[in-house]
Image (cartoon, rainbow, N blue to C red; front, top):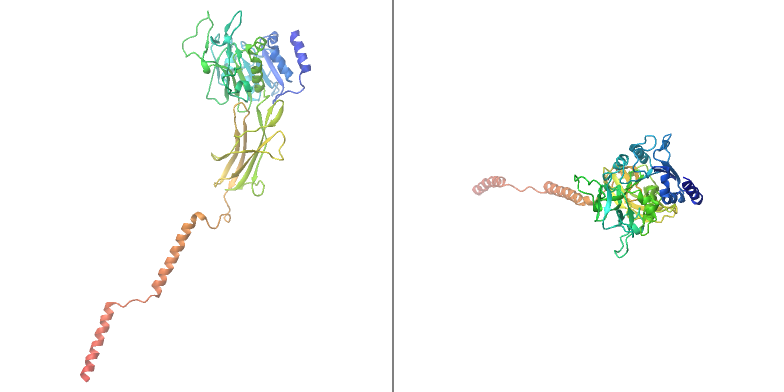
Length: 463
């Protein structure tokens, strides 16, 4: 107890005054007994060095509360008591789930002695731990020591390609000639849903890694296919739609001083990356402003007209290294939606003179659809490891006024021509019919000839 108190005081004096987290600096650490904190002195000391207010409590401490007067008492929770069947004064898995729903972040460390409490809590986030008393075992990749070797201490090096969460040495796709980092893991494995976009398996087993029991223990029941290979999860990260973050590690030992200082291992860097991401010290995105207006006038009217040309802009920032920075990417998209997207374009990053130095502005020149109705202008940006950015504006698009349409449509010129040709033809035909002489018929010509013959005979007689 004295050792932990001295370490805490020294860390507070040497640590920075402000926390590096974008969501708060209050951390609750739950351990089996208060004396157990000395086994995690390096990990907890690094949190205080980074400026966090660390409160270490025993799991059975009845004064532990996640909320006080309806508000969060802590911003982050770290569970290092995997065998505990309950926490505080009757805190259940749903209490920790509500803590995450309210915006709290959580690190859950497990072991082969995992309790049903942790199992139910993990199931809320799509993580299913293996049966009790099982281990992640690897007979090819394990901790090799001179005097003794333990195949239950897996030397894992199968990392996820998640540069927003892990450091470049873990998340890089470099040549095979470079040695891969190694993380020593001793604990229980878990299943994860690979189809869940909110769940990222940060560390998985190698092809020779499997889940089983140690020698001399009761073998596992052959009801299911043994978990092995890449489908065997060791450390996974989950981000909710509200941007709260939860990490699950099947090993409390990987946070302990024994493995953090193990030669040949990279536990210190890996655990630091997981903790920084979970506690929102990096890869936190935010939208600082957005706007849209007519291209011609620069004004934002109460409504737009169909086929108007507009400009849409949005400002994005990313939090890392204890400061906000411009977020630069080439895949930020804008959508104009009415049930279905009518427009989807990629916005271009521009250097706007009026933008703040810690923001990046994205710009798009957009021609609205030739369809009136109520549209939603939306930027829905979701990338692995980064906070979700979902910006929506409800915009009315009206049809043109009766005098706003063009008098003649170029596409209708053939119809205009056909109409005029028909009118001209009708007038020409009418003129010909009205002003032409009617030809004499044969009956009239015969009657005229018969009348003329008798007059000729009479004249001949008189002569």
